[in-house]
Amino acid sequence: MLQSKLFTKTIKEAPKDEMSFNAQALIRAGFIDKLAAGIYSFLPLGLRVLDKISRVIREEMDAIGGEEILMPVLIPKENWAKTGRWETLDVLFKLKGEDEKEYALGATHEEVITPLCRKFLFSYRDLPIMPYQIQIKFRNELRAKAGIMRGREFLMKDMYSFHADQADLDRFYEVAKQAYFKIFERLGLGGITYLTYASGSSFSKYSHEFQTICAAGEDTIFICDNCRMAVNKEIIKDQEQCPICGNKKFREEKAVEVGNIFKLANKYSQPFGLEYVNDKGEKKEVAMGCYGIGPSRVMGTVVEICHDERGIVWPKEIAPFKVHLLLLSNKSSWENNKKEADKLYQKMREQGIEVLYDEREEKGAGEKFSEADLIGCPIRIVVSDKTLAEGSAEVKKRNSADSKLVKIDNLVKELTQS
Image 1 (cartoon, rainbow, N blue to C red):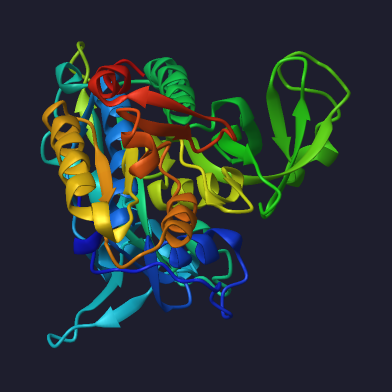
Image 2 (cartoon, rainbow, N blue to C red):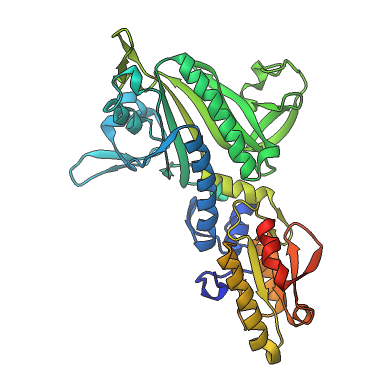
């Protein structure tokens, strides 16, 4: 992409109405724009990151048997009333149509997926199934103050699994855990994300959260370094030792919940009458589980963690572009140097290397370097009078202070191997 064609611009000063670092950095770098508290537009650079996070999630969900669908955002009152959540779920945005019927915007989708699957699940041979979606959710948060880590409108991946019995639910639940660890490893959060025991319900002693250590986090977790598990502060008083290894020493950390998984048992299948016929011809209730990850919350969490004083430092798998190519030149040699930079840009694109090319003639070196650091692509390449004199380009990784000269003839090959 040519940087001159981006309709968005970077901002020198952090927005004064934003308290969270992730929102400040993403707005300054031109990734998002704030419409209202907890409500953001994702701009071209930001959408590229969000799409890449979603792609990683899709790949890992598909790998464990997930089937992607897309459910409605507008959910009738009667669906919520079936489970009692029209009255008890206090984050619902409620509205009334011209037909006087009442609806709520989707904060979660158990009330949609369960009656949907009732239309297709009849026999034990139809089970298990694992439909999921990646869709905007709406929650009427009292205080939306953490940028895109806690919004009133946000992107969510929600998977729902359906099983013939508790044993099969337990089996798949462990598969889903491992898939989540793979996701967070690929997103650059693997070493600091912990499976965390949280309070359960009448049908499960625990639920599980995936908590990422982050100074800006709203949660407090207690980590067992012996087995790399954690316990949420909400249950630590009743949990004097690690539920896995029995260790009684915990390390306290602030964290962000980036994912969660729950065993739902028959909580939703029962009110919707979701049953199947087993191999003996008997009717049985379907056991359910649910599995959530917020791509937009993950994006904000990555920014809170992966940055320095100059800007964002994106993990390579979700960076908007792999390479940020900068053209620097005196006026007298601009046309010649641009031809060389243009050729390099085309070679990279032909080899499938994602590159943001700053070919703007009116911008000076200082401004280009500053914007490149703010945007945070993993590799910066500079073509200038100095480098071209040696037939080279300067290559620098965003997370390194060191740079090196690489012959332009060898550069594309080196990039494809890195």
